[in-house]
Length: 504
Ligand code: FUL
Image 1: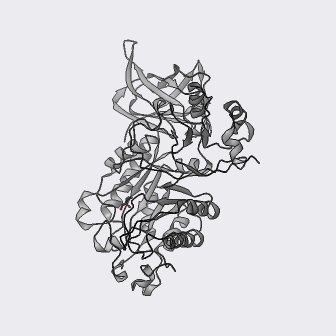
Image 2: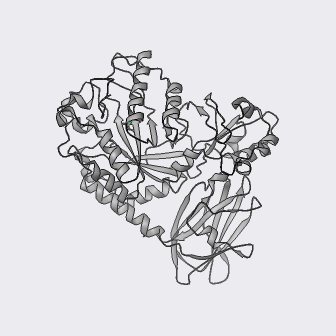
Image 3: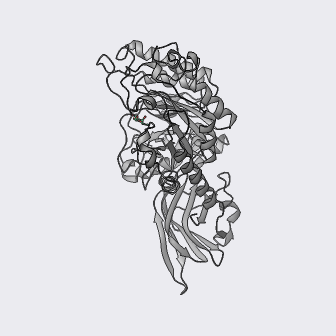
C-alpha cells in the first residue's frame, strides 16, 4: 500500500506508470499534484487523466435526484425558521411518503434527499440531541419518524436515500461552542447508523448566527472522517469534498462545465489505499465564477481534482411548500429545459419538490413531474442515427448502445470526424454526446454539421465541454448525412455515446 505522501510527491513520469486503469483494471485517481517541474503540457496531460472516485461515478450516473424540503417551515409558511417554533406545529394531516417516492420515481428520479434538519434545528427523527424534534410534537403521539418512513419507502422503490443536515442551527443553545460540533456529530451518527444505506450527505453552505448571537467554527474534518467510516459509499455534497454546488439555484449550469478543476482549498486528509484515492478537503467559497476549469485556470494550478457540479433548483419559487405558490409550479416542458441545462451540461439535477402540510406532493407538482419524465423517456427512446463511421469503420454499436461501458478512445486530439447517417425523412433538434469519464474529461470543442442538398456542409451547433453528458438543442433540421467533429481535446478523447433526437 502506498502512503498518501508518497503519492503526492510522485513526478508525472511516475504518474504515467500509475495509470489506474492500466494497473488495477478499474480504479481511480481523483486528485493529482502539479510539480514545479511540470511544463504546461504536463499539466494539461494530468488534467486529462484525473478521474472520478467510485462514489462520484455512481452519483454522476444517477442524473436525476430529488430534494424534499419538508419540516417546521412547511407548517409556519416560512423559508427560514428561527428555531423558536412550538414542536406541535409540526402536524401533517395525511402523510403519504410512499406517494412522494412513487411520484418521483415515475418522473425518473433515482435518489431522494430529505431535509432531516433545516436551519430552524427541528429534527424530523426522534433524536437524543435536542427537544426541538418530532417526538416532542403530538403528531402520531410523539412516535413519528419521517426519516424512517422516507428511507423505507426509498428502499421499497429501490431508489437512493440521502440526508440534508443543516450545520447552521438556530435553535441549539450550544451553537457557537465546541459542544455543538459534538452534538452535530451525534446527529450524524443517529442518521447514518439507524436508517440503512445513505447515498448522499448534503451540507448546506448557509451559515449564520445561533440563538446566542455566536457563529460556529464547524469541525468538518471530523464529520467527513466519520461519514467515510460509517457510510463509505455516501457522497458528501456542497460543503463537502465529493460534489460541488453549481453556483446558482436557477437550474442552469455552465456552458463549459469542467469536472476537473484546480484545487486551492487545503487537503485535510489524504489517503491512497492502492485502488482508490480517498482524499478529502474542505471546500472554501461558493465557486460561482463562470470559468472554473479552462486552460487559463490550469495555468497556475497546484493540484487538480475531480469535483463535479450538482445543479439544485426548486420546482416552485420557494424551497418549502407555500400554498400561494400552487400556481407557480414549473411545468413539465420547463423542467425539461432545466434538464438540458443541468444534466445536459455535465451536471446532476437536484430538483426540489416540497410536500404540502397534508404531507403529500401537491397534484400540480405531481403532474409536472410525471410530464417531465414522459418527455425525457419519449425524447431519448429513439436515437435517429442509423450509422456512425470513424475512419471508414462503422462504430455505431459502440456509440449508440446507450452504455458508458463501451467507448471509443481516439488516438488523436483534434479534427476527429464522425460521419453520421440518419433515416431519410428524419428531423432532429437535439444532439447528445457522452464521454467515458472513467478515463477523464477531455473534449474542449466540438461541432455538428449537416450536408445540404447542394452537397455542402452547413453548421448545426457547436459546443465546448462534454463530460458525462452534453445535450445541445437547435432549430429542427431535416437531413440524412451529418458530421460530428471534435475540434480540440486535452488528450485522446474517449467517446461513449452520440445521439440525434427529436424533442418530444
Ligand atoms: C440554502 C438554504 O438556505 C435554503 O433554505 C435551501 O435549503 C437551499 C437548498 O440551500 O442554502
